[in-house]
Length: 459
Image 1 (tube, rainbow, N blue to C red):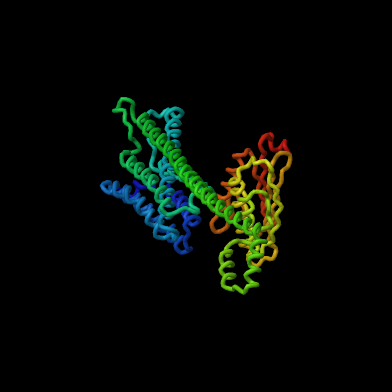
Image 2: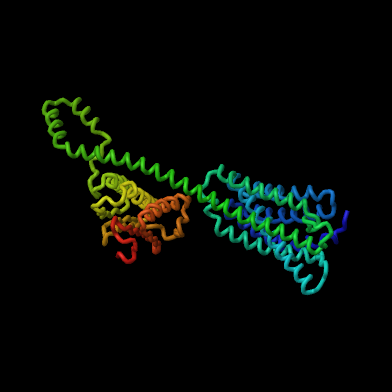
């Protein structure tokens, strides 16, 4: 058993550890939520637990392995117990924090220690420099400053990873991160006084320390790169799958709408004959036959006129959206003139109009009690380019950032706009989005077949 004076490095780094735990607490509050009481409880318990496990392993050498293995388990338990979001999301949040604190602190600590060793050996001419306990603690503390910055960056940029996913997806993402933590803990257990690679005494303590620290530095760097690629790569794969699923479901809906629209057109075309038939049945007072005749006509829209673009699928889509707007008392203005040449696939047109108008309708519907709710659609051909502009009212308290809004499920909005951007970029077009003063404006410009690809020069 050692004395408490042997833990001076742990006590030196303690204030920096508290700063990290404060940043981790803010990270968890943003993505998994907690009450003020539980927030304070997390800070107190995690800080005391961190000191306890580290001091226990230092004072009782035979308990070092036990304390190293139990410390991350204790931290994850606190996150899972004290925060209130879905359990899978809490596990992912704890896994990310454990990976970041382990990798970033090891990376920075190894790098700073190498610099210090170089300085002492080359400048101070010390043959075999050895760090004092307080110097080790200070180096660890400075490393935790970088950990705090890393957690702060995660808090600002990982919202797409934590929003709008299924519980199983969070677990799939968390498992490899936990494996990385386990590998690092095993590596720590293999270390002895900061030395893992030994020269067998041929090169001396100085080079043994340099090689060992360089090994940890390279391992941490590679692990950070792999973790970043994995997390953001998995998020990209998820978004691509959601986009693909939404796109194909939209195609099925548009086909159904097109068929319904064709039925209504046939009905309007035969309306004169239907009126003659019903008039004859009425004169003969054949009321039951009239009822049967009318039942056969039920479910076929009679008011599908209005937004006639020349494209059956787009007409059917605009009819459905106009009907929804009318039911919600949303002012509807539409002037759509599609290009005569079929240079844009009709289902791509439906993806554009469908996603844009769905977002516009949702934005208007969220304006509870507002009288000024409107959707304005303009589309026409301008100098061999197809121009589409949709304006709609929106709540002034809502804010738009690239790909999402601050509504309940921002990822759905983001996926819809991603599908729109994919279609536009497929035709070498451009998308411009503007949201201010309670008005959302989305403009699209796509060159038609044979048009120049320089959009700015074409208009």
